[in-house]
Length: 373
Image 1 (cartoon, rainbow, N blue to C red):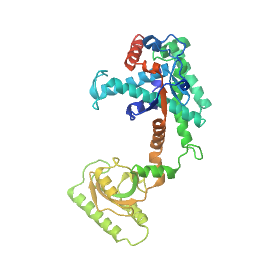
Image 2 (spheres, rainbow, N blue to C red):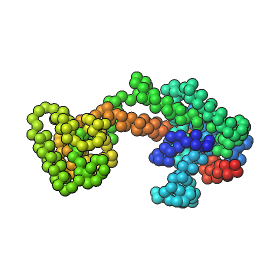
Image 3 (cartoon, rainbow, N blue to C red):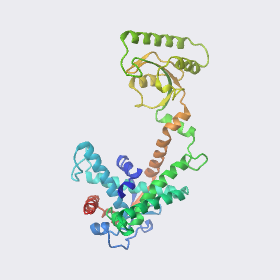
Image 4 (cartoon, rainbow, N blue to C red):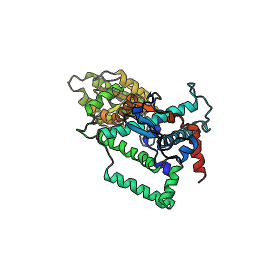
């Protein structure tokens, strides 16, 4: 139950992110310490004190038990992934398709997770992002529920220790989710230091291949039952589609978009038109292939010929990119990429003690501690 609370966005990203890092060597200015605690899971299996500072990024240090937490999380995530897709658990001696050993992959993944964690905290500090009073209260309430569940604060902290962590590190990880949420909220707050305007997001969307197209659909199946129309009914729909294309090609006015919209409002059988009355904004892989191919082949202001897909007959009009719709589509992706860029640009230092935190040793100790109940 405790572990589920700590499954933040950072862990999943660690598995899927590109595993390239900037890591610098030990120097006195990095702020590493050997720690003072000679107890706990981390110390028992590695000899490294849980409060030892073993990694540092711009003055923000990661303790050994924070690294131990990310080892437990990342290996659990990878193990679940492998069980789902291969039916087998993690084998530390296996080699991945790119020639990298599972052990080395996990080390790289954990290094990424620790680095992302420190980057997030540093960004929060840079932009004066903290937890709200409500969030602090929610954390306290959650902790109290666990204390009640386990019978005492000491028993609660004993459960935390099975994950290789001290209480303060548990709280630090739990706070990271709120920091991410609040950074994202700041990013969406107009006028803030992190705010991304629709114009900026539209430029990004265009770079990612987003386009906008309006569309008329004449369905070749019953939109309620899904049953195919008869050949005669399909022929009638195709004839109407060709007639509409002819009308559009004969248009001599200066507002083809409005004229197309009038015809679409009158004839289109697309159930999505009510939600998207001015067309769809999308990128590759999000529409049926025939629709996508036709849309990308058009120039802005150009009308397609009749395009047939499994849904029916389509007529498309390529429009200028809808900046507002594009911004909405990529807003979260843009922020995620912003975080990723910060991680890529950051140089994290690790100590000799960091190298003693063997993922297999620590993960197996965590599993054993949890199995003891």
